[in-house]
Image 1 (cartoon, helix red, strand yellow):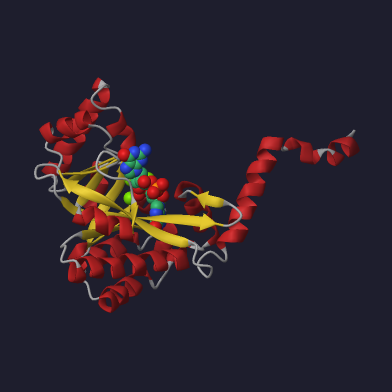
Image 2: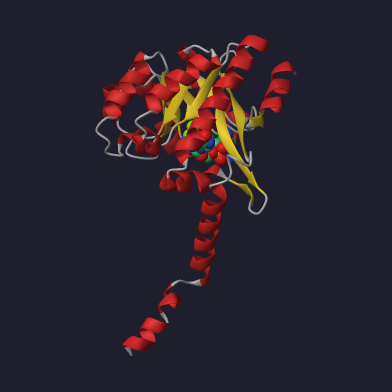
Length: 276
Ligand code: C2E
Ligand code: MG
Ligand code: MG
Ligand code: MG
């Protein structure tokens, strides 16, 4: 009996599970050479001021195209990059690319835009993170106040004792700190107060529910009021309709980002978006 069980152990994994694991292995394997093969590219999604409807900045979002796997979404590959540690070189590439494009925007195209870059928990375990950011800003020739670093509650919850100091130092450098995906995790007021956040981004799942869901409208209203009372700017993520925009305007939301205005665009696409 035991023998039979032993022989059939693999059958504990369903076909579906095997396919998932196989894809994971494949992604991990391919990701090792992705930077060298130039497969990674930053896209930029515009952020708009609600009142003036003018573009005020962009968020850098990573795209990966691989010959064997096709397009792999960041929701699929970022967690694997985190797990393997590949997020460290990839994250450095992202920061450098984003800052060099920011320089181009500001000094060649004369657009005083901000650049938001996502940082994941593992990147904070890199002892060189802060010095790398400093060096990259100076090499790119852009001033810190135009860089915004987006972190999720996952960073605060990752149990790294130096997180507090790292966030304070980032903010002392003049870089803006943004709380991404607010409302999805262990969002708490005390975090927002304890750390030097400048911006709060309301997660897309709440914006999705407005104006149809009364509960979501109430939540969004409360989050905005609370953020303002703490002196934070509020960005609504995933705005797709005029109805959502007009409600967010009524609720005094400061900035919006979403398909209603624009999907994330490659650098060239963003430049022509700015001109049109
Ligand atoms: P995020 O930082 O919360 O980025 C917002 C996501 O919402 C993006 O997905 C964006 O394309 C999508 N989005 C924006 N507006 C709309 C809309 O109106 N409708 C819909 N349906 N979606 C919208 P994306 O680019 O697939 O990125 C997913 C996540 O992957 C990001 O969430 C971020 O957590 C992570 N990520 C992306 N690029 C990087 C990166 O360079 N570094 C790190 N560490 N994480 C990244
Ligand atoms: Mg983000
Ligand atoms: Mg987000
Ligand atoms: Mg997200």
